[in-house]
Length: 228
Picture 1 (cartoon, rainbow, N blue to C red):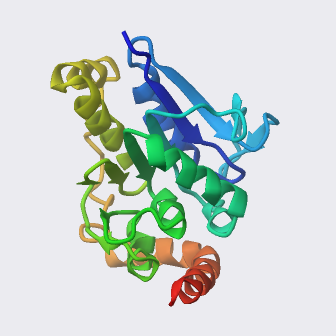
Picture 2: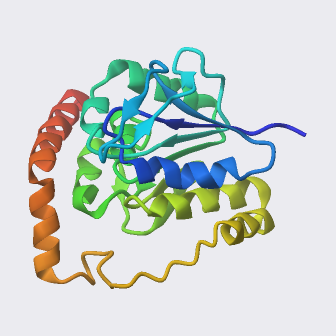
């Protein structure tokens, strides 16, 4: 039986649940090899302080069946990181599925991989997909051929289960979902700006303001450089 090779990009200031949510799903596939991939193997500190240890370097990474790019504050630097963007382009050429969680979609788009493709990302950065050539679609999971993107943070679990279903069938995906007891029943209807209270949305937007302003400048530079 062919062993599935799955790599999730780890990087400084990654949103850890963007990474650890799909990691848990992918690592639950019987016999799969699942790696955290980065430039080196030194410990990394996530956006919320959790320490992560990569176990595969970009240079040594074999061709992956599934490539996953999570999001977080650290994507701002990645969007203009030539080494990372080149790695994503190389891996994308041979991967069966190229995936993202949250603002990881912006990194794939910055690499030119989502041009003309439908994609989603975190609601607070959704409008930045179009300037990078993607076709924005508001949904929990958006699939455009072998490119599958998840919305914000927790949507990474949904995205990963969708990928498992594509690779191994619905039965295996449902078995993993049951094993993880993934049956969301949130205590509040505040998980989407359409249902959250306006003052809650304003509070969250204010918290994103500095990162958002920097991200806008980066997107503008990339969009301008892509002009013929």
